[in-house]
Length: 293
Ligand code: AMP
Ligand code: MN
Ligand code: MN
Ligand code: MN
Image 1 (cartoon, protein in one colour):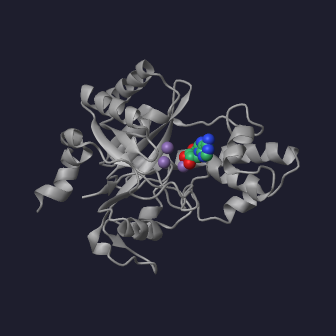
Image 2 (image 1 turned 90 degrees about the vertical axis):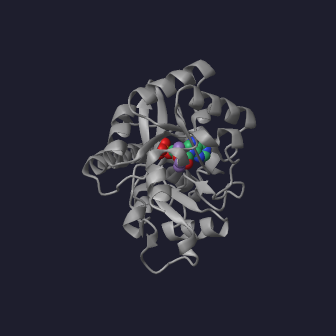
Image 3 (image 1 turned 90 degrees about the horizontal axis):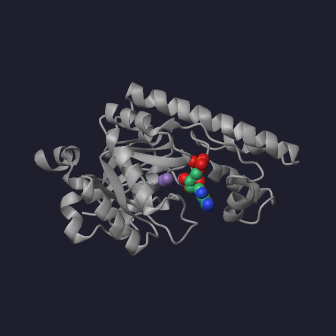
């Protein structure tokens, strides 16, 4: 078994269709793929459970299980924290109500960024976004636009000069809280996972505070591995999860094949000694894949 439980399609800031992600996962010997777009589940109007509708049906589809997921942006203290939901019922009204609000907040943020950009003499951001299949507008889209217009040399530089806090067109985000995200994921029957905990600007003590706050509102797992994770951080995260009775999840956070150092299925596997804490031991996973067989 090889599970990749975090990636993005072109319905958020990935560049590929859900079907192409599934195809790539099959090519990379991934057996379980969760598509986890930012604040949006449109991928599952196309990819339904183990079935892919539409023209782009990947070959070898019976060898892979597609898991309905989402990645919800949350405000916690002064930080933006991401919560992944796995096995969510994408038609659940509580979940969709929250996602609609998040998508609206994203739209409003991008409009405010566009105003700042127009004041600086760059036009066309909103038109460029509307031409995409995207349902959740992200700063990553804005970064690509800035590069396409020659305003910034690279995507990275666009974040640095324009999109980061104190950047030229920075606009604060209005995200839901951790509790609301976890509540909606659980209402939709899913498992709430703290995404890439090592990527937040938090020291060890603060990270533990976050893990506890997440658990206190019903969070059940954290990502113990992802693309480019450092082995020391991986060890720390496993310890943190085990100490607080959280399951360990793992995923590539793949967005775009142009970033050649990332790929579906590409991240260090959870260590053998930590397998008993892996998310595949969670009752929801067991019920779906193990008990019925
Ligand atoms: P948003 O959720 O709209 O703030 O957009 C955040 C997305 O932009 C993340 O999910 C990443 O894919 C990407 N991103 C965030 N920070 C950076 C960065 N410094 N460089 C490149 N991409 C980034
Ligand atoms: Mn992203
Ligand atoms: Mn994230
Ligand atoms: Mn992500």
